[in-house]
Length: 192
Image: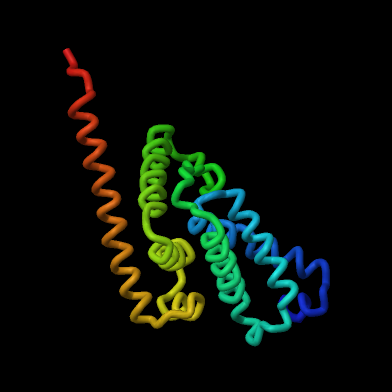
């Protein structure tokens, strides 16, 4: 019996399996969109409640992951409409999102953390519609056709948004590097 069928039968072990399989994936997706870990957890809880309540509406059980992604995206959009997230400045917490590799040196880990933080900040500066396609394409490794289906936009629109998002992301990263270089020039003490 497939997971979707067991969920329709309201089997408790199926609900736990659903959370185990898709929980981290959905939290990562929501976090990248709403920029707040606690809010991402709340969005994912809402997603599971909605999914369990409407599981009988899932027409193709093989598309459970895409269906859950659609629900989490809609919940994120709803949150974004309710609050002005542009006024919230949040730092990227690598411990909550990324698993550490203990075989790396401390310097390598630090440099990777700085790169991840810079990338995260640059992504967070993007408009929501660009953050959405970047998250789905690169972090969730979805195809253009899958993204089109999830956010209900034409494939050409998705391609266009990805192109603009990449360009904006590149500009955001370059701007950050330029500011860092300018800071170094102005405030770095000369060595003797």
